[in-house]
Image 1 (tube, rainbow, N blue to C red):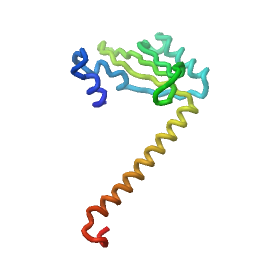
Image 2: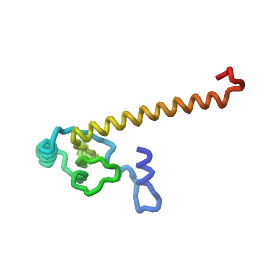
Image 3: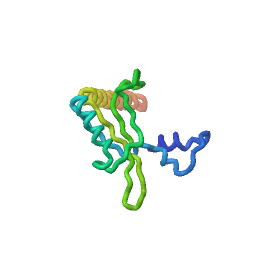
Image 4: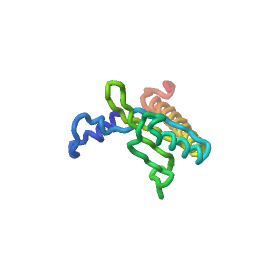
Length: 137
């Protein structure tokens, strides 16, 4: 959140306080669907404000994009939640295809594993570097 706040509080942009008013995903939910028809069904359900009381203010359809920088495709809805006191919060609902989502989770786990492995190896190198004698390792 701090990275996003710094991005949106950029002094070169004409942005006014509160800077967090431009952050769209501090509240996020994910829905994983088994097929395209389920994705459309979820979208249509959110499209009907009477059912959800969450009007959609933005739709980002990465399935329709020719190219996606990170290669990951999903449907993202930004919705407006209005509290009883009138305070409004923009939340994000990510609608995923199960096959793509499962691959993303496997890659994420692999990255975590490799990160831990690198840290372990780095720590061993650190111990060698700081040892006064070979027997201290």
